[in-house]
Length: 170
Image (cartoon, rainbow, N blue to C red; front, top):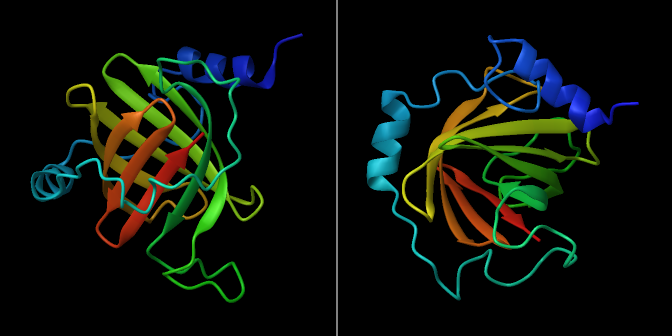
């Protein structure tokens, strides 16, 4: 019997219309002019005072070391999710994430609100530490925004969009 992950990956491998390895809706135009302009003006640097520098997730030592592929904890802030009572732009929405690498692309699938809401980031690698791409809200696909990530280590990715953050830790 195939695992759920294998089934999802088989969907995208067998459907040339889907680029991402998760078999969900693709991010539209992940390299468009908005992404390029945002990337030119967003140059994150590693910092011990960054909001994502202090561990905030349960540390999992079972992840594959030396790669960003695999399971992550995720969180984001910068906009209010109207489906969450009492939410505000400055409140973190936490969940789980997965990273997969396909060629020079990194795909980050993540959730929040106890798995009820999901997003996908499709980013290209620009060197060993920089990711540049776009996010799509899979529950509300009209919401897409450019995103830039800084791969600090195989335990930390600092992510930025114009209104806020989408970060990953393990």
